[in-house]
Length: 328
Image (cartoon, rainbow, N blue to C red; front, side):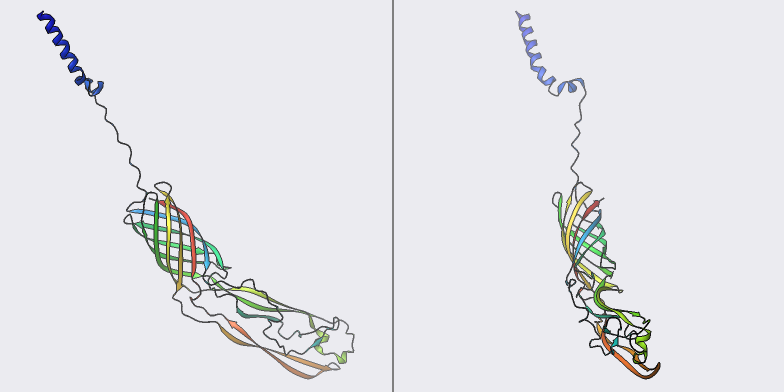
């Protein structure tokens, strides 16, 4: 009886100890324990001590729009009108026109087409690059270079910038400003042009004694009047200021997409407005009798020509940028 009692006691103690022995698993019982590795942390999309390189394209629009599609009658735009040149006889067509020695190749600036004095058009495209260093998660400084496809003349500049951002998740709205310089661009003016083609008379149909030397030797066979709209280049460095707002989205920890809009102020150039200048064309009408000159008349024509000035007025512009950012 005592042996049976001892046997039951031994079995009960064994069953009671078994859960404690295997509580930490077979490995713990065997003396070996597995170390669980923690999951890798999610990257911080926006960091302190971060370098950003942004490459972007931009649509740029002028603050002063133009009148680039205007149409005018070149004859009515003639700055020499009324013309005091004497009439000469074109023996073939009966056309009365200017003599060959009167204003044969006129090109006169008759006025500015648009107030805009940078793009020489209403809007254009451009591009540039930014390099920024964020000493904290929220504040950064950098440099910006930009180029503008102004009409027939490139414009470009650079700025030192300050950026303030407020990241949350993958997004970071930001505000920025900068100061720098800009050079190039153009202003658009309208020019009056006249081209004369001088012909000769092989056999006059009227008695030579009754025809002037200009008719016998050379006369205007074609007088072509036309208008052109041409750019006059800016050749002065101006100051440039910039203010803007934008948003960045990080696709990965190191690559993002950015879009912003800014207003750019051009300033700092001495103001020299456009001025009108009187030009004078002088010629001579020689009348002959029986091959000999017996009368000479001096012909003087006068007209006003615009001489372009320069200033930093009417050069402000807006800029909408879209690009990619590389962060390190």
